[in-house]
Image 1 (tube, one colour):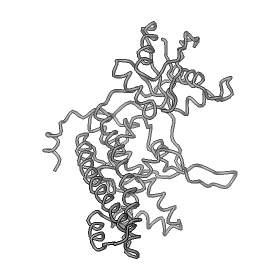
Image 2 (cartoon, rainbow, N blue to C red):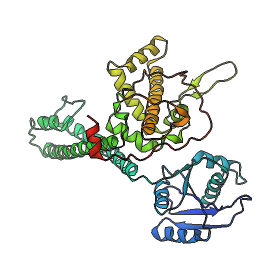
Image 3 (tube, rainbow, N blue to C red):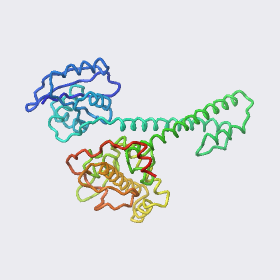
Length: 397
């Protein structure tokens, strides 16, 4: 079986490199370099037609390589996702002394695809792709709103010294601006710019409100119970679904916690056992869990009780917060598995699903934040929901 390996680099790179090994001797059959344009893509497709049986290996098919992977899947090609860590390991032990070039990247990616069993097969999911785009757009609008509010705060503080508000809304800004009538040219310019910023803030708020409704409808259409977890709203649930994709790619809750960056790293030495904070993993997922943990701590929830128990056990507030985030990672993972099982799939490792009233205090047998992940791939579980939005609206109160 021939296996074209395709290296998909950063957006700033205008060309990519393709190599084609074969089994069992992994002999290089050919190589090519193609532009990332429509012409280059068509030339690459014509080039690989000489191998009727082929498998495409794309590094980061859920990240930087997503456009290429989805395009190939749409064209009927079989594509597998090669984790960047596996490709880096192959490159490290190759004769290239870990040098990173397009040629070495493509070769290492192809070798991983040939030698590794159980790689995730990329499937076409238009609904999930639309959810991912909506989530990214919402994050962009949220950042735009923060920048607009910061500029507005600066202008108002110059027009009305000492009257700065911490959480400024468009209505409050209008009321504050109506009380000042500067007569000098600089003051009039500040007031005009503040009025423009208020108009921009109103526009951004309207877009955020609309996209939040779309995200909530999309999450409910996928029959996900993530929004029932206290502290996770429609935007957070959409981010989890968009970034996770198929929960079956995580063998267990420990792998999932490692991916979210909530599992501490073992830093033990000799008889001294200790762990340190992990700054790796998906930081957007880590942020969703962080927000959920803060919300649970601020309200009368089981998460707050768990947080206080950690404080009573001698942990610092930051350490207790990290423990709560680790527990919430397990809750989110079990809810994703429960959603997958509800849609007709079998959960990874036979894990039971979470209830629709999941919280940080749900039972977790043998919970230990230093649990190490177990090796082994999992079978795909997350299938596309068959129900339409109208049918789901009747089923969900």
